[in-house]
Length: 112
Length: 111
Image (cartoon, rainbow over all chains, first blue to last red; front, top):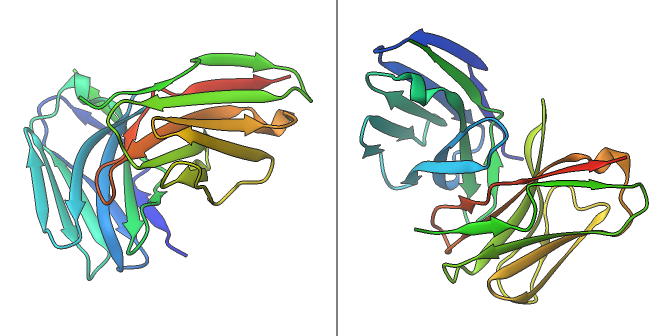
């Protein structure tokens, strides 16, 4: 059964820093990987989707990479801002399935 | 923009009541999903549907049922609500193999 781990569970950085969030998964036979953001008490906002054949995706200050063979993905956030404070979730879908298995998230705090 | 809406943001029900949570998407997506989110446990899939009238159990279907009579609408039903079903319920939709888009969530409290 696929398991997704996100470390650290919480991270606090000063404004302006570049940072990396980590995601690992146990079964490398994935269809795609998706990064989400969740603000307190709200739903999930999709940030980036990486198909299994891709190595990375970029959107603005966000860059996500995927190393399927080692079961890892990273989300790089450049020049962090207080508005980036949220919980970031990583999720993978298995080959032949559209179900997502989620990590428990990294809670990011960007201090002004 | 894709829009997924859920019928209520907050809901308070009594133990034993029948509860309906409604989800509507406006992008003609084939797939729809119901998750619950609990502190320390993360998001867990309850049920999903890949077509009208089709449904598949997720990881935690016990105590729940679903209905999909129209492509845009996916309902989650708690036949007899219990206190351990107090949770945040999130609906999502996707086109096959593509991004999942989530609704704002319904925070259900069962007393």
